[in-house]
Amino acid sequence: MASVHHVPVIFFCRNNGYAISTPAVEQFAADGIAPRAFGYHMHVIRVDGNDVLAVYEATRLARKIAVEQNQPVLIEAMSYRLAAHSSSDDPSGYRSKDEEEIWRAKDPLLRLQKWLLKKQWWSEEEEATQQETLRREVLETMKRAEKRSSPPLESLISDVYADITPALQRQFDQLNAIFAAIQRLTPAGHSRWTWMLAQTLIRRERRNMATMNMLQAINNALDIAMAEDEKVICFGEDVGIFGGVFRATSHLQEKYGKARCFNTPLVEQGIIGFANGLAAQGSVPVAEIQFADYIFPAFDQIVNETAKFRYRSGDLFNVGGLTIRTPYGGGIAGGLYHSQSPEAYFTHTPGLKVVVPRNPYQAKGLLLAAIRDPDPVLFLEPKRLYRAAVGEVPEEDYQLPIGEAEITKEGTDITVVGWGAQMEVIGKAVELAEEQGIACEVIDLRSLLPWDADTVAESVLKTGRLVVSHEAPLTGGFAGEIAATIQERCFLYLESPIARVTGLDTPFPLVLEKEYLPDHLKIFEAIRESVNF
Image (cartoon, rainbow, N blue to C red; front, top):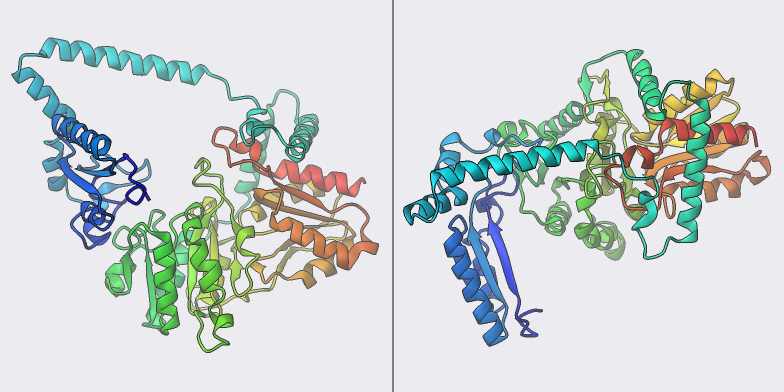
């Protein structure tokens, strides 16, 4: 667009040679980013990105061209990422110390420092003074930050819209009322959160440790599927030798080779488009989207191609062999771009199946079922449970049914429904309810498309009450679909309004994550209010 409309804009691309673990040579076949610009008739300048003076000159030239010729310019600065991609990244798994040392010698700050010293425009004494000044400034800033209190609860809703909507204000008022009720339940001398933590630790001590966590169960399922059928192929960003950012695909490339487990470029739409083509030709692709938050560039491919392939061809063609794996949800302090729960976007898509496991046993059995299902499946993995959820998992091959809910606990007073990571939270809430004599029936949907309305309806006909919980925002969340269906089928049997315990209609917060999440105390309060209605 910039070329067509002669816009004087400078595109500055710092090419550091890697995605996370995937080198640039596995990202694209061209020589870097620069060749792409020629197809748009753009001016291109490639520069040593570790040379401060060269970058300055390149930028000055780019500005001159852009302004005088009314044309866009692309600057590709060839550089290197010396540090890890993130705090959870270990670069030693995909690059050598020798490679790092070569680039460390090209550090732009050190090169500029040496140049200034050579010109006698800088001295060792000035450098030492500056380093000490900056060190103290950083330490003082850290101390000030540590002393700052958490932002007020109002900040959860203050920057979502220009003016706070009435619906969002009602949600916030309800949240305040829930916190007030929780405070009344909290023993004297405890804060709301320290008491919640204590309750969590008490319940974790009661668990029996077992053989696999959720990541190991997923990896085991992929291993079994690939060993059984050579048409099963795993691919996605950094899934190769690195094993994915969460290591769900560890050792699969070593065992089955690069032809069956390989890295892709950072292009989610391309990943799913490629997967659709493979599945249409008879392969069994298992495509990974690194975080569910990144799935939206692929939304068109999933909704308009994956889900409709069979329908638009009159069942002459299909992509039934396709499984899309992606980690979703909060609880890892990931902020708004690594914590979203987008399941409701896809449950509105006929032709697609949506599955969410709650523990390692389910993860393995449901993933194997998804890979072998005749329809395309979106497999959402609750990432906060990846290593936290541990359980006994059979080593042999097995499948769990897609579309069937599981009653994890029987009760007579109220039905509580959830899926994925919320099932652990619901379990803690139910324990609190039972201490007050409330018998809860707990249902894990496991599948959201299709979802098992019969099991939920039969339960509500017995209990007369229903609470549904999910992390995603309230408005348009899947709990609304459940509530609408159950009131149609069980209206005359309901003893109280159907309650939804969800996230707020705001982006997922970072600092106030605990306040945002539908925790066990919020669910317990909804159970108590429903029973006492």
